[in-house]
Length: 330
Ligand code: FES
Image (tube, rainbow, N blue to C red; front, side):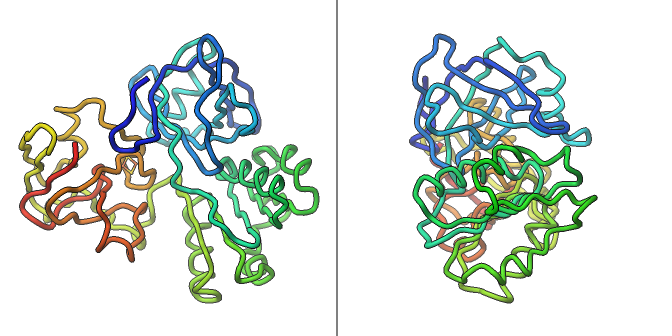
C-alpha cells in the first residue's frame, strides 16, 4: 500500500472484485475486498474511490455500501454508452475475481453539521447520498431524500431507500410522476437545513438557482458526475489563447513546458505516471495538487469561485496559469 502525496489519508492498493450484481437498469454494483480479506480503511458518507481499470483508465466512484461493512467497499456504476469508456469497460469486462488498483477513500462531499438535511438525487447521483441517509438515521437527525429517474427501472437503490426512510423518501419515476418539484421541496425545507444534491447538470443548475434566489445563506453542497455546463465553467479548457507556460515540479526541480493545447496533467504524467487523476474535466477533485508558487487560473468546478483567490491547490487536469511559471508540490 502506498500513501498519496496529494491527499494524505488516501491510499492505493489492489483489491479483489469479489461480487457484481445488477441493482437497476444499466447499473452494476461492485463489491471490492482485500484479496485475503481483512478490514479496509474507514470512510465517511460522500467519500469516493478511484479504480484503475484493466485498460489503464481511471475512474472515481462514490462509496455507496454500508460503512459498518468494514471488509468491503461498494461502488455502483451506470453504463453510459456515449461516455468516455470507463463505465462501458466495467459493464463489458468480466471483473469478478480480478484485482484492480483502488485509490482512496477521498471525501470532497462530506456532511457538514446542520439541524436537518434535504438530499436531492438524480439517477446514479443517489450513490453518495445513500450512505448519508444511513448516517443521518443513525444520528437521529431529520432528513428527506428525493430520487428522480427516467422510469422506475432506473431508480437506483429504491428498495433500500424505501426500507430505510419510509415516507422520508420520495421516489419519482419521471414517466409516471414527472420531474421533481424542486422549488416546492426547497420551500418546504427550513432554511437552516443543509441541501446536498448529486445528479445531472440541469438538476444541479436548477437547485443552485433556486437556492441563490430563495435562500442565499442556505448550506448547499453539490457533487457533479459530469463537467459543468459552459455557463458555469470555462468550456474551452484547453483554449489556445491562454498560451504556453512553465511548470516546475518542486520535489525534483524538473521544469516542464505546458503548450497551449495540452493540460498540466498531460505534461506532468509524462514524468510522473502515477500522479492521481480521474475525470480529466475538473469536477472530481482527484488531481488536486498543492501550488507552491505562481498564479493558477482555476477552471474547475471543485473550488468555489469565492475560494479561488485564496486557494492553495489547483486541479491540474483543466486549470492553467496566470503567471509565466507555476510551481507545484509534486
Ligand atoms: S481529474 Fe477530476 S478534477 Fe482533475
